[in-house]
Image 1: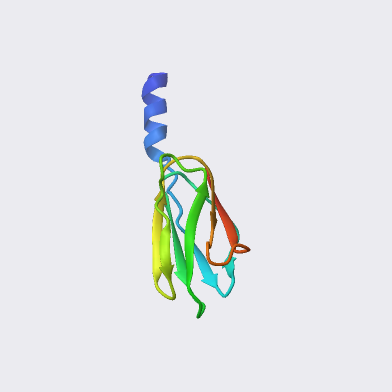
Image 2: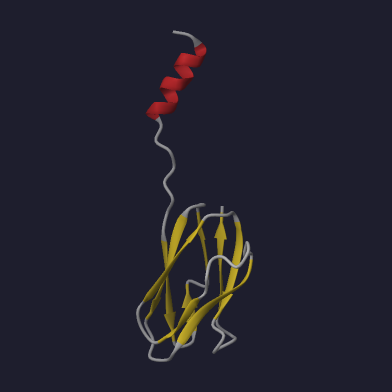
Length: 105
């Protein structure tokens, strides 16, 4: 068997890494975890757990306004797929001390 054929065979045997999704809880007045990391193409889901209204406003690491921010609400979830590597900073604009980030590798 030639070296290129052997390499191709080995590449078929090794599964490609899968994008891992993450969840971030939103409580009264915190994000948990405050920082998380995912692979490119992964999704992050923010889940509202508290009683107060909160949002997720992305302020850094954004290519042309993406991902869109998550609207203000008291309950539910908001999921965003992150396709580009970098650090995405976010804040709840109603409670400025609530900050978090996602590192996309």
